[in-house]
Image 1: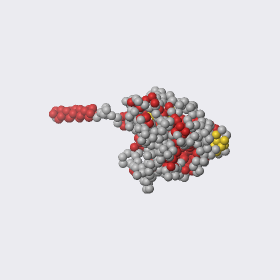
Image 2 (image 1 turned 90 degrees about the horizontal axis):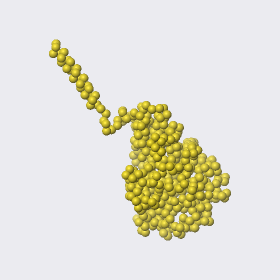
Image 3 (image 1 turned 45 degrees about the horizontal axis):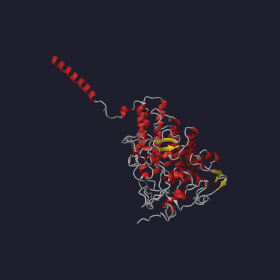
Image 4 (image 1 turned 60 degrees about the vertical axis):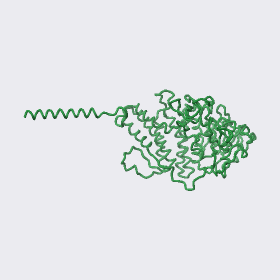
Amino acid sequence: MKKISHFILFLGLLIMYNGCTDKFLEKEPLDQFSDDIYWKTEKEVSTFAWGFYTSYFTGYGSGFTWGKYFSGETLNDDFAPTTPTAFPKNVPSSGGSWSFTWVRKANLFIDRINRVPMSDEAKRHWKGVARFFRALEYNDLVKNFGDVPWYNMPLEENAPDLYRPRDPQVLILDSVLADFRYAAENVRASDNTLGPKAQIVNKYTVLAFMSRVFLYHGTRVKYWGLDATKATEYLEAAKWAAAEVMKSGGYSLSASYRSLFNSLDLAGNPEIIMYRQYATAQSTHSLHSYVNKEAQTGASKNAVESYLCADGLPISISSTYKGDKTISDVLANRDSRIKETFATALRLPGVASNYSTSGYAVVKFYNDAIKDLPDGNSNTNTTDAPIIRYGEVLLNYAEACAELGAITQSDLDKSINILRARNGIAMPALQVVGNSPAVNGVVYDDPKRDSSVPSLIWEIRRERRVELMMEGFRNDDLKRWRKYQYLDTKSNADINRGLGSENLTTQKPQ
């Protein structure tokens, strides 16, 4: 009996020892996070949010890239490619396979916030940030694929809903609008926990993007005839969001148009709502190098001719336009933004090493102070990139008002005419007389306008094209307006031409 008792005692101690050993060995890894232990404080929540930034705030990209500038934009009438782009006869149903990785990440973010011991205000703020990123991802999905399945929770590997059919895009956009509205109501107006130079999503970032996203979808739904009622709702949302930024009083135009695009430090610029910072040996790009000493895809003659003359009239009717015999003539007596965007000398293929395909070279992103420094060449460029700025918000407001059929002189005076009055620009104010554009009280109508576009909307679109020239918006604009026919190089030869047909002509494919 004594031996049996000793054996039982030994066995018990062995079990206890093994149990303690197992608990000792079952430690969480020290070199990585796991979902079970990560969500402890607001700091971890904030850190998780940073994972979305480079995906949605691309800026000038990273390394040997320049973000969404130039690349992928040659299929629009602002650019003059070396050879005309041919459209495929059989258009594929989509651009390729889709991914819902970022949707799941946003949904997981929303779900895990509930685990973190923090105030209700903090939870609402971070859920707003997460829903903002989910809205941006679904905006991209709808733009690329139309109808897509809507997911509002993180699904497991074998969940049946993974294979659910597509939902109508208007239903998706309603959900995106709900996400934006929640974010606009709950995301903090400011968050300087990482210092004043840190770029952190706030209420006005949300509102600015809301104006961009729903101007796009409002006009797309309208011009593609998808749902007139929803088009109005989305345009009203864009107008409201822009108006909220405008009345905040927190933003104004930069004193220098060019400094928005070629600055080494955008911190403190009053026009910037969100920007991407670059720094030597940390994060760099190559856009400055591209517009500095490299050959580039240049602007089309059509784009250059869209700039008004200094008297506020189109070149087709202004008595001050000198013609296009020389580049000096082209640039004389024009909206000053033309010289802030394009070089004052032609850079012709076969003549200049840093030529432009059209001769018109873009200098909007160029900073002369770093042209020969490492910061201005190769992939080590450090100029900061605007992500979204107040100038765009003003344009979004004006266009939304016009598309809703209710734009007034007051609307123009607090949007487009502020842009025209920018320091160094000083263009005459755009006026509305009846439903027509006017300058200095004189109604005009550009004889070169698309006859299917009302004259006032044509001028508002012109203002958008000029202010945002070469910033990567035009392709989306043509899509949402259903105006891809502008890319027809047979009907619009100026798309593929530079300064005068005697200097540069469209090259025919071999």
